[in-house]
Length: 260
Ligand SMILES: C[S@@+](CC[C@H](N)C(=O)[O-])C[C@H]1O[C@@H](n2cnc3c(N)ncnc32)[C@H](O)[C@@H]1O
Image (cartoon, helix red, strand yellow):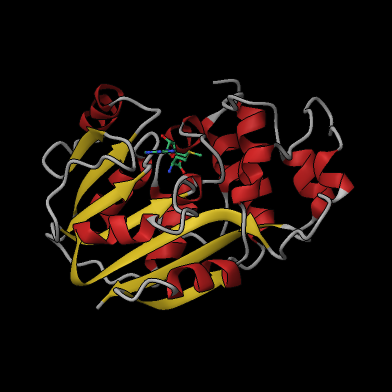
């Protein structure tokens, strides 16, 4: 690492997320895959009822930091499911965290999940669901793995307002060493209202929460800058764009629904 532990701690200091502050800052910075996944998990869990022993699916868990966090903070068992990161790599991290009896790494694609119907007491997904869940048919497939009365909660990178027509120029203009932030894939970004409407179409769930993280872009920017200074970013920094956008478009969206 390029910087001291003391500096890492300073860079990650954020009073909005006290649970996340307990975790080794080097581990958190090395876990970069987008916005700080522990902060996303902590915010989501404000609205989730997680009890010890529950079976939880962490869908699109990336490097499984959130899976380890959920198991440690709430005593739940977590199936850490991802596609880009292998089960073997996540198993290593899970063992290093001493959570091998509570967190189980699974490599599976979102449309071909290997679980029994009704198996999970809760499902979470952090900065991942937008990649497959905008499909009109997806929630109906996905909710089958949840037991009646269970909650599904997601946080996604999204929008504070929908983009109608042309993409705003500042989202496509290069910033510092980064080319256009906006690529066609970004059309999966939507507002909280869009997501609420999308989930309302499914008669098996009742939407409980659809909101925007207060100052979400500032938290996203803080972690991006921290990882940049620590040298743990895999792609060029999004910090320049986040600063220029200043929350006009880019936002972090939370959705929680309960299966009837
Ligand atoms: C931006 S990363 C976020 C990872 C992690 N949740 C985090 O926040 O650090 C998105 C994750 O979604 C997963 N993902 C994307 N498409 C997927 C699919 N079709 N099936 C399963 N996982 C998928 C990827 O494997 C990736 O790890």
